[in-house]
Image (cartoon, rainbow, N blue to C red):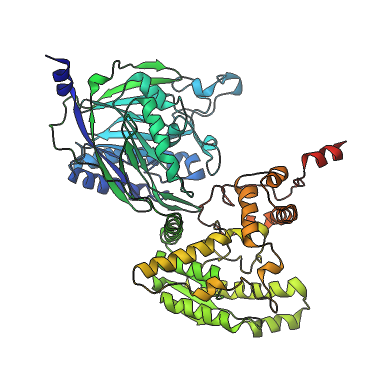
Length: 617
């Protein structure tokens, strides 16, 4: 028999489905039902293996819930019950990879003097945090849990605190399914060169599966494909990457699941921001793997598990679908809509209310809310003061009419006058009183009718403290908290253009886009009276907040020194305000809240190195 004939006979086929689903943190039963439902869909497409996202059963991130032993044990129990349920429902022949929260057996932490010098390299259960939780994935088949994998690399940067919660794994399970060797990894394992994918490459595998819960930020989809291609080359095998979709507090997950060949060819890619079942037909040649090893390889121990040796009968392979990439503005818009919708719906809130000033921020938030929830669940309130212009009232009413949402007007001048009769206020204090009256009335309407109050502040305002505590900063969720003002305008123009292209009414009044921004708390007031131009402001914020650049680096990048000094002072002084602000969907490299955590009481101020050296001397 020729080498070519032997190769043809050794070729194996496998249809893999990536279930890009929206889970709920803490809803073990609901998430398990989700797995059964989507496995049934995958089986309906004749998939042999279906992969779900990271920590599917518990939802991600579960934060300090994972520290509760009762929660971890419930997760383990749900996993075992899920395997049985799949078999009872006639789905036991489909292999399922599902993320869950595992619990390391043991009586508690080992004494400090008994800890290994390198916990990551400690074999088996010799980890110093015995009894701690693990971020895990399991392969289910035939009513049983066939193999379990504990995430090796635990991210501890940005929005991630996994080193706080989890114990790293030391074993790499490889499961033989229909004669195809499948290695299990989880999310961050892909980001580490020489990590589990490298071990898989040395062990000899035919496929690597990677459940993920990778939060969205702008243009992140541009990073994923090159990353997965690098790891596929290292593993010498195709990789299927299944990512979570949906909102969880400040985070939103965009899906964007994909599959690449061992050579790095993009085989299939799912659309962003929607639940989706992506199927891909893989053809592998086990004879091309020169050696298959088990045991210790580098810092990990490779274990091998047999499900089935018999290959699937040959079938006509279907080309994988590749979703078209979204434009930057559409990507951000969908992220904000999904983040808002899931925050409201997953928390069981019936509707939202927001103050509408006729300005661009409230008009944009209203449009986002209507897209997310439907016009009937969105209530707008105009709250004019003595300084409110006629065009502001008209623009607010126009926006509400365009969107078809509920709208009413509650003049605040009499209420402000009553406050002023009780206490004498002037300047900024008098201006802020108007904002606080608005916030109080909106919170009253929220309490009365069960609406969640949406704050309408953008990232530029939040950064420099250009908002009033218990006034316009009041609210339970801030949809554009991580959206710079310049991007607010871009999104408004995009959303109107999108409506025009579809033959729909433009949702945002052109006047709200064109007019100079103003809080209208004093006669003739404009934002430019107190702030640099938003183009300058946003550029400095992007470098100082998102990229953590110091003063010298900011000046090297060409920012105006006076603008830099002014902005840095405002940003640093506003930390106490940000600590009290509502959560909002993260879309940037570094959002206020989970991402950027600085002490409120803090004497550090940026200065040029030469100035610091002179002061020290």
